[in-house]
Image (tube, one colour):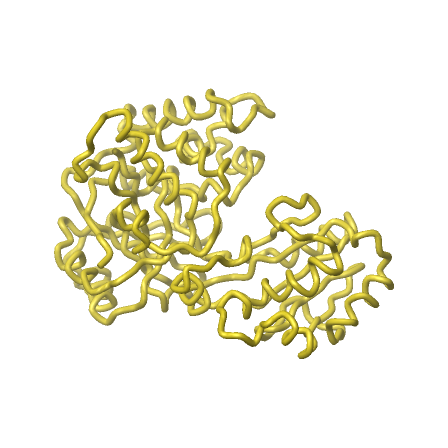
Length: 415
């Protein structure tokens, strides 16, 4: 059984929520964060990307960056922009993008569940990014953003979501605003949240969708604080981290596409000829319509690549292993490695990962301006993600892009 508990969120005044709320730290670089926060001293980017308030070019892992983030958080508290909730609560968070909406439950989950495998993973983490999250959390004495997780949908939890967000909801709506990108955000507060907590007792496992480094960082922070303080009873707030829990039927996964800067020494015609050994190639649309097909942009022309059956059999893609059947695994084994010579996507500097709703335009621009080649994929399904995590396996790096994303700075967990 997965643990869920209410928490006393540090959160903005309702009238300041739109100014405070920011995109997550990991979807924008320093230059983008500077642009987004320009003219808005309340933006939470000053807390989660504090290098924007320091000289351009500063090392992102410089101690001054973490110290400045803590100072900026304290300033928002001191000015009364952020206030602590009076009592523990759970929250309902609805994100509306166009005609699509999804609603999750914001509450704390247990580090013990993460360490014990009740909270399941599908990605490896990188040490330098874990280190960054640990230093950020320790500097702030807070978890600045929730871990996005999912669980197999239950009727009882869906009924409670409808109850607390409907027109006759007994919950208090805290926030309702439209961000600069046109996405709408609504949050309700349920004091205590006993009914919701009880409903989660029937949930056997949670699955990390987005936030593997935040979850791993929370585990390491708990260990570090235990070493500093001695024995920890298990009830201290550092034993828990904030999560946004979406039923599995509400999540939307977009593809995480790839751009490769050069063709491994081949010209375009030789590259196409090399691909023809393993793929049927036709000119096509930018986005593949089905699982098992890849889009490719070469010299500003889009192609559709369909792996040949004998190649799929050769690599075992027809086996029951949930990882071997993933499109990105097939892409790695019959294109990236043998044709482009890329064996490690995490470390090879020739490959760039491009996600989000505007990824096609970004890929086309890179190919037009810099050459190379771009690839697009059919999105991973939620069922595929759950199957990989249940098997204790790991997806290829950057397999999923979840959209829409929650805003940071609305529900902060202090420990």
